[in-house]
Image 1 (spheres, helix red, strand yellow):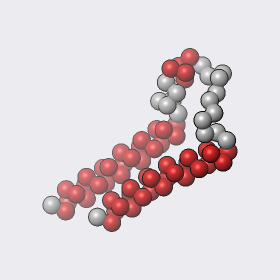
Image 2: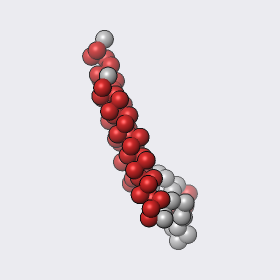
Image 3: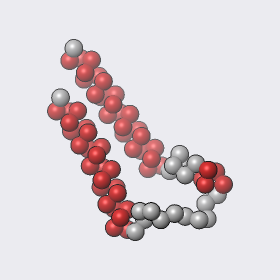
Image 4: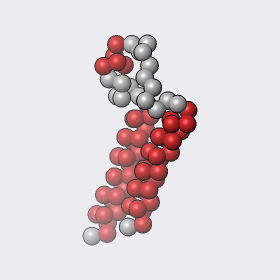
Length: 72
């Protein structure tokens, strides 16, 4: 159970930390205007940071499922 709480804390903390860095750097809410067509149509899907958070989320969900199944 402690791993589930720690995993959730890491995910939420990482998101808040990223938002605070963006806020301090002035990047929060700022948009680029010189992006190519594919990036304009899919701004989040071509962002490696989004893929990293998605991969970490999937790994943590997998860990939670494995621990939950073994605990039964």
